[in-house]
Length: 160
Image (cartoon, rainbow, N blue to C red; front, side, top):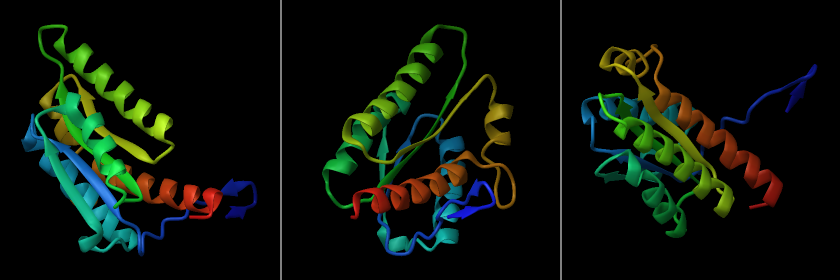
């Protein structure tokens, strides 16, 4: 939808089926992102019964879960939520980078909306600031809106 040079997203989630893959590692943050994703989906009209949630051990496993949700044939988009906090070793760089690359690879290879709602931060305080409750900044909420937008975009392009 175009309005004077600006393209407005279609955020009508009614009838869409959304999968959410959530990481248990740092679940004190991931749960906040999950709640944000649920709120965002509800605001767009996605019915709670049309949301499938799965949990995986850590952010590294999110791409496999996203792929499985897609292959199930029961969803129109996937939201991945998790939190990787930098530590004292190179582990952060490996996990955060491979998680992001894996999610992108699944999305591009399969041609399916897979949204990145994974925090990659230096501190717990940064994670908490990006996973606030109602009205605050919540990356899970943002990823949910992106999932609805992308599902509708592909629906229109592919005449699903």
